[in-house]
Amino acid sequence: MLSGKNPPSLMKTLEYRKNVRVKRNFPVRLFIEDSNLFIEGITTNLSQGGAFIKSKNRHSCQAGAHVFLTFFLPPDFTGQNKTIGLQGDAVITRIEQENKGIAVEFGKALREFERIDLPDSQEKTE
Image 1 (tube, one colour):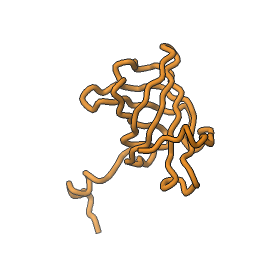
Image 2 (cartoon, helix red, strand yellow):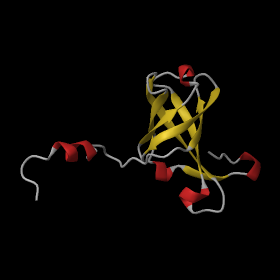
Image 3 (cartoon, helix red, strand yellow):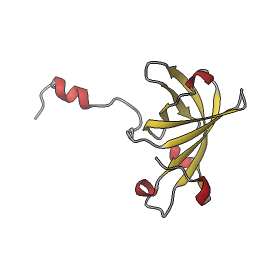
């Protein structure tokens, strides 16, 4: 049993976040409303409240910008027969040049995003 203080190794494994993060790479397409621009990226982690997305085009983004996202979830993750899309809106909370990506906060929980079935020719695989 743990006493009043947690050992350092345990402290490193605890996450003090509101939502559990899934550390998995999913293709994502972002539409940036202010610039009328589409960019693509890959999630490095994803939760019900937000995501971190690596993108070569992060320089086109600004903190505070409203974006519309489409996540492409493969069959091995969803248990479906083919890749499905989840669409919803978010706000860019920060751009990280060192980590080569952007952090977004969703307007509603990921589970509330709209599911879209993709035609076979539009499926994203990674």
